[in-house]
Structure formats: structure tokens, C-alpha cells
Image (cartoon, rainbow, N blue to C red; front, side, top):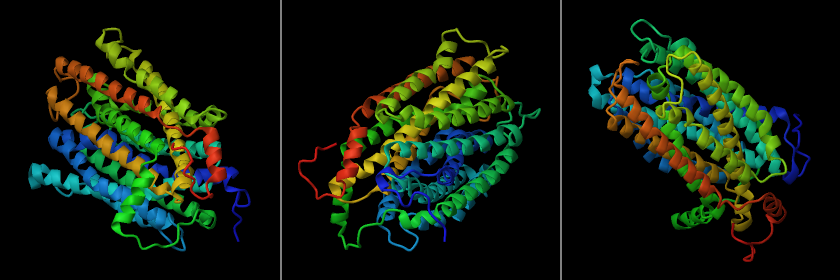
Length: 492
């Protein structure tokens, strides 16, 4: 019989071994790979390679959010209340493995084209496959992420566990991105940038799908033995729709949750906007080739590793909220600096030998900040569980992380849609070769990017100030979580 390390320790102070953190964190590779494709390549692929107008590509991604609005909270709620011999989370995780990998493959290897199905046909294909991929990645991601709040209640251990998760999420996305820039999207005489290589994108889809499948299965199997010590759902109850909605309202009405949710709304608009423009900026603004962009990707591997090493250390003895806001504000200011300086005429020209090293160093620092920020915020979400349980007598890990995932996908989709509007607004051409775009259009793109990104980023950090769970407050919640509901418990 396998001995589960940490099982004999109390939940409040249970220490999780490195192997468990490794196997748990590995699951985020799936989301990292999927996110890398959706955020950096998908719109560019369907727009510049397959010929779908930018507005329609952005609209397809936005419309998938309608399904997310239903599936994300539903999966979270059902997962919190499911009773099976495999616990609350693992049945969903196993069920997602094959469907998400297969659908992701066909998203990048479309069975239709503009020539065979017309613009409308390609639009509907992109929309349909995007909905399927998002649903099944959610079916795995929400239950898998929720495990962090079930492994331990320790304030600092949760940060350490999430640092592994973010490390693997970034490494997964970076690995497939590096392969894309270095192997699949290689420059040719007809395509000096390498970014409009259709066969390269098709191969990218195959490799990415296999990575997703492997991550889902390894993380699911690797954490399976912990099912006996995970939290159990409440006794089965026959609730009416009205009672269910009332419970959802009680859970999601937590003030600290609302602060994080609204903060995430503004944050992921900024991130979705930035990510969708990333390759446009690299290829058309800086005029980099894929072999040059890959060196940024290599630098990001070290960024994620550095964040893994220091995340838990910088949080020890400090309030997670304060650390997250400080890191976030620095990142919001640092990220657009090269573009600002270029617009002011204070940055090296595109043919300068020092341009690439500067961009690599800047990108490495910026990504380190964002990995640290994501780790802190996810750990803050984990601490919501006991705060809510103390007031509602229900553990809602899945629902909280579902709401966060919903914000990530829905609002980043809005950011992507803003990108489509910006590209259309500045008159950015379709199927165009880098270096042949009107300089005024490139300048207008930079002028639009900076204020939109910074505004949403700063608002996000401000709203996070209203999160109220402190280190001492979390410890108090752990002590009193099983006591009868006290009307005098201060609202947080």
C-alpha cells in the first residue's frame, strides 16, 4: 500500500513534498500550451495565413466566451459537490484528456479553408473548434487547480505549491513556442519572418496536442493516490434551482473574492490585448525574425525558473496582497517601456546590433515579474476557500477557481477583440510582409497599445487593494472554520 506523505499532519499545517508539487504543477503545462496558442498564434494564423479577416477572427474568439459563461461556473459547482470513489476532481480530469487533445489538433489542422468553405465557413469552423477546446480544457483545469486548497491549509505552502504550477505552465507554453519559432516556423525566401508558414502551424498543432494529452494524464495519475486525504463534498441534497442560485450568490458574494474577480477582469483585458498583439509587435514593430524571437523564449525559461526559486521566499512573513500589488505595478510600468522610448525616438533602431539584446533582457525581467504575480494571486484565491467556508459551511474550491478561469478566458477574449478593433482602426493590412507596412500604421499601433495596456493594468492593481484576507485572518479562519456560523464574524 502506498504511503501518502503528509497524511498524518493536520490540514492547517500540512507540508507537501516536492514530488507532489511537481506532479500537481505539471498539469498546468496543458493550460500553458493551450494559452500560448490562443494568445500568441491563433489569431495571427487564421488572419495572416488562412485569410480570415482580423475582425472575424477576433469575433470568433469573443463568441466562445458565451459557452464559457455557462461551462466554467457549472463545472466548478458540480466538481465541488460530486461524490465518486475517485473523489470530486479526478473524474473530470480523466474525462478531459482525449477530447481536449483531439480538438486542439483539428483547430490547427482545419478541415476547411477560405477557398473551399468561404470566409463564413472558416469563421464557423474556428468558432466551433475554439468552443470545444475551451470546454474540455476547463473540464481539466478547474478541478486540477482546485486541488491546491485541498492539499493543505498552510498559508506559505500554498504559495510554494502554486509556484510549481506557474513554473510548469510557463515552461509548457514556452517549450511549444520555442519549437514554433525554432523548428516549425522557419524563415524562407518567400516568408522571411517565418510567421506565415501554414505547414509549420499544422505541425505545431500536432506537437502541442500531444503535450496537452501528456500533461493531463501525468498530473491526473500522479495525484490519484491523494484522493483519500482530499476534502469530501457535503451530503447529497435535493436543492431547487432557486436554492442552488442562492448558494452560488452567497459564495460569490464574498468581498475578498469580488475584489480579486474585478481585479482579474481588468488585468486579463490588458493581458489578452498584449498577448494578441505580441507577434504583431515583434514581427512588424521591431521587425524581428522567428529565429530572433526564439531567444526571448529561451530567456523566459530562466524567468520562470527564477520565479520558482524566489516566489515562496519573498512571500514568507509578508502579506500576499502587498507582494502581488507591488510586483504587478512594477510590471505594468516596465512592460511598455521599449515601445514608449521608441515612440519618443530614444530607443535603438531596428537595424541596431544592440536592439535584440535589450529586448531579450527587458522581456526576461518582465516575464519574471508576471510569473511571480500570477503565483501570488493564485495563492490568494486558495485562501478564499476557508474564509468562505467559515461563513457558508461549504468548501467551494472549484467555484472560486472556475470564476478566476472564467475571468481569464472571457476577459482576455475581450482584450483580443480590442486587438481586432485596434488593427482595423489603424488600417493594418492582411497577409502582409514584415517591413512593407506603412510606418505611420506601425506608429499608430504603438500609440494605441501603450495607453490601453497601462490603463487596464493600473486599475487592476488598485481594485486588488480591497482584498481583505491577511496572514493572521487566514490562520483565524483555519481555527474557527468548523464552528457554527457566527453572525458576528466580520465580513471580508
